[in-house]
Length: 148
Image (cartoon, rainbow, N blue to C red; front, side):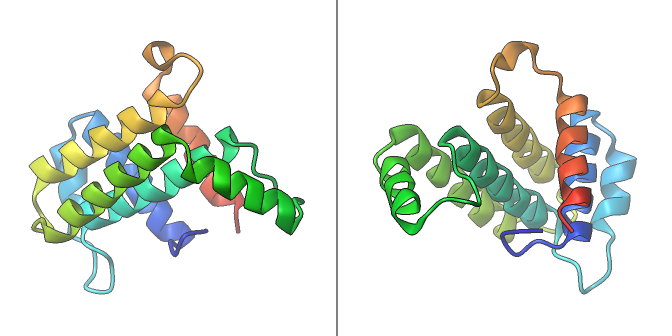
């Protein structure tokens, strides 16, 4: 998994996004009760949100693994000059800070962060109002599982 998240962390974050979407406090409690080695759930959900938005922004700007250094520099300049990309970065930075400061078992904060991440993920799809959340999360889960 890229951006410092392991596959297990990505899957735990996606499970939390799904639980928050379904308003499943029991599932959120189970996910929040992770081991001491695991990131607190609000922080993990926010970190995953940053990863998801970075991935979607890269796709939106046409980033490919086969690009030359010159092409990568051009894309980097395009992203840096794009107000939407800058606002996305600001949003994810804010969510990460909030997630880090939240209590590990604060389901209200976890749900708000999760819904914001989901809305951000939907916002970059072709038709956000018609994008169903559970299939979208399933796509990201598949990506996490296949990125090993």
